[in-house]
Image (cartoon, rainbow, N blue to C red; front, side, top):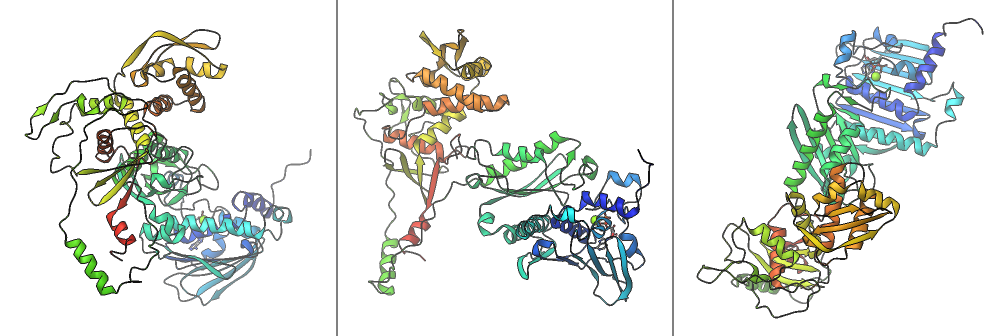
Length: 620
Ligand code: ADP
Ligand code: MG
């Protein structure tokens, strides 16, 4: 082995550069961060050929004093920290003092900079780590840095670059993310001569998100603003129905810095549990502010992974903030009708038309009273009861009449249990409850009702499933129906294992299941909701569900509840009485908790009266 040598400065710098300068996008990231640290309020980024041949960053920040310029290009030269204790509370984006040294060792770099109180600026140029010129120059306040021919002296690294387009896209994505992290800074991004992004820098989050991510995204978002346990969480997150197929639209900013944090993602996704469709991911832009000493950013050279000293506190704060925002803002998905195709003025004059509209609108408003139908025996797939008979109702004088109970359906049982604490349902509607007028049912699937200024279409299966699911989740003890003849169910070995490993959770769900050996279980009791169901198939469905669900026991418990709720709920096509429809509609519309079925499908859609009026040309 040969003698140990200290590496020459330029070789050491080339090696170090590898950590910071991976591709044009990483150069841009470092340089924009420098501009932000220099308190710029306007930053322009220009690239050509994906940033490989040309990058320019111009800012209006504090600039660098002439004498400091060459120093700034030395390794470990930084104005941002000076002692080890400063490392404990890093408030700037840079602090390693590496970027300029690294970039200038693998590219041709020019800097023009001028501080607020100097009359002359400085022009400095350095190529492959070697100073080319250092002189005074007239220039505006702030700093412009131009990087040409990245990796010109390291052809091996050059080979690793992708096509111009890919490198350019990576630069765009960096600029977008940084722009999102600083709504108070006006960004402009020019790519191959075209301005592709501008933000106003007015400090308004929504405007910033709009500029960066587009209108469609912005309109689907709800605001988050909360503070728990010293953690401030604000920003925007999407309505559950707008969840996306990938996690690409998830942005977390921590004290102004874009970070990746599994904890934050997990907390947000947990908050969407049971609201978003399975397999879809929430889109969000969240800004977290936490005390500087509770986070360790010095984890990864690219500094995007963060570690929190108290992960649980972060998880809880984010979860609560997002959950609250979703719950508060949750409105039912609204059906926007397409623009009316006919021209209302085609066959009548505008004046005639307006008169007609006025005469219709002046008529006294007539809202039909909810009809309570006299039941006649009808064929039902699951039910053979008279829904009305099962609990007390009020007669015209307001007196309660108790009616003889008859066998009940699952739906009825739920309604009954849930209404115990409430006043009887079919009495005259009290003032503060909005009146829900049943219009009817379409395709034996969608219940149509009118409430306030809207029409709602309710998917009766999804609605009933959600009601049952909520009940299963909140009930302390689920009513168990013991089976007179226990049922044995033969399963695949993985299904068998999943059931045997979860007998406790099954018991919470109202099942009494025991091991019968030889991949077989014996079912001695079932939740009474499921009386009459094909227990064999329910049990294998639960087993399959458990196999797919992760290790978290809460999730596995919910999976069992999902299956029970889904199996016990009335199905599309089942015939139900108008009273049942009315009751379901009330449950759904008067309870904010019933927005989505447990799989995240919406339970109801809203069509606003205004939308109809627009459609019919009554209003513009
Ligand atoms: P770091 O950002 O980690 O301190 P850099 O190598 O990126 O290290 O920058 C070195 C120093 O150069 C910074 O600490 C800062 O003082 C100065 N500097 C770099 N870019 C700018 C800029 N755009 N405006 C003002 N000062 C800058
Ligand atoms: Mg820096």
